[in-house]
Image 1 (tube, rainbow, N blue to C red):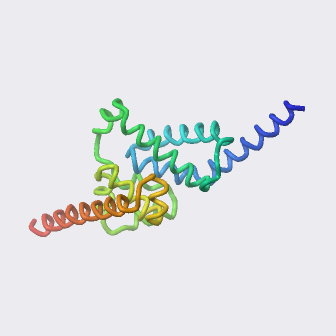
Image 2 (spheres, rainbow, N blue to C red):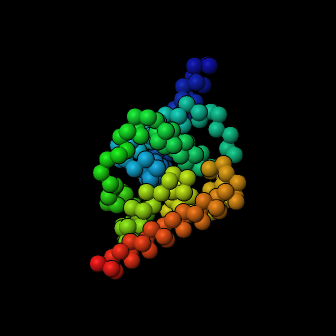
Image 3 (tube, helix red, strand yellow):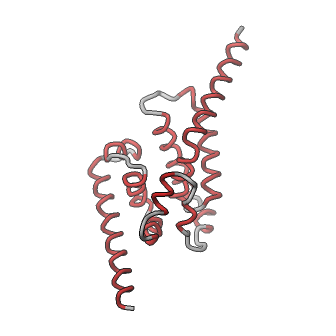
Length: 183
């Protein structure tokens, strides 16, 4: 009898995992890409995210939604990838082109439809602490409170990073515009 219960539990876990992959896989892959700026590495990270998710499904405390939980895992795995020495050496390759963000979704259509692809390039150049709040606030349309919970930061830190990121982008884009006008 115990084996039958374990078997049924495993099937429901498998079905839940399949549902989570179907519901959030593409969005999480985009989130990982925005951290690591490499499509192949983003795919590896998402595999790690769902493996971790499968192993910890039983310990999910439902203090948040599955989506928030998976985003937290994705962010942590992405940050871990950025810390790895081998990845640091690998990242100094050709500039990321905005077309790499295109994954045939409404969000990517919005990004692709932006007047200036420079904005995307500049966001990807921001330090990770500033980039993540911009991505979560503007592209994931999360509130300050949601970002605080997800990144485990206090509200003032989140607001400060968002302000600093906006200022950096503003200065950089104004500098580019002035350089373009002078040519």
